[in-house]
Image 1 (cartoon, rainbow, N blue to C red):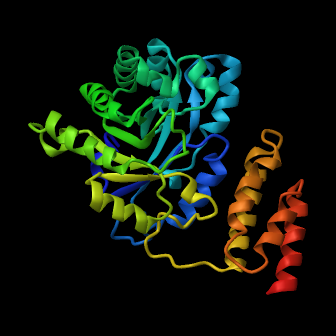
Image 2 (cartoon, rainbow, N blue to C red):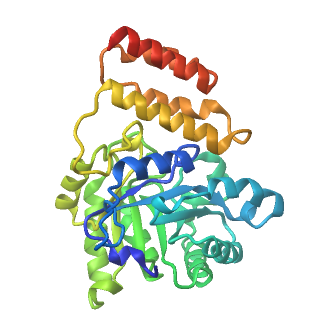
Length: 340
């Protein structure tokens, strides 16, 4: 596919990589309900304009025989999930290089480098958002990953700074120097976590900085900028595009319980439809991860699906206690029988 990013119609949307969330089952449900596959004989298959990301995968584990077996579960994808991007994290440029070569062999459309996760365990070893404070190492990692990836595009997902929003210009300039295909910018610092509203003015500033730094390049040579932070819907994403000039929008938590999130033609979905898709999601999870992941992983999804309709609060409470698929199906059947 080459650099698929440049083939996307702007503005495009992305599903944020989220640990224990963006697994195969969740991505598959998103692809089914946000995608519109063309069955026309005169046209190539197509779908709505969005990109899916895997959960983040550690480069050390991916290059270890035992770790690789486990992580290949997280890297499972289907053809309807394309374009699909694998996200990597770690601290060793050589391992990023080798991991990128491995990811390319798996057939992924792109590779993303996690330089934004603010969680303590990753920060403690100097990875993810900690790389904002290690610009030289960050630069080495991006360059090494690009070399390993060959002709598939490399993106970087990061934050506007480590401690202060004012760090944005220096940090973003450092990343842009390495010429990634895409810069995905979360509008908060590492220190802010998700405690304050995203600074979309800083994201807009990054777009202006990109145009200044790479202004003499043709359109296809510029790094694309994707904004991220507090976007809950497709419509809200379009508003952010107008405000900031970003090329695309990444949605994370806003996709919970809303597999239609990237489909601009969808309308509100009632309880019956939401619960039908929830059970489809749960069955797919069980079929995919039987003996590999605990069913409790689905509870965060149940909480999101079971909202916005009469009786949702009581239903959620019951779903949070469900220990397996059979019990979940029984709870939903009883709810629908009593309420619809």
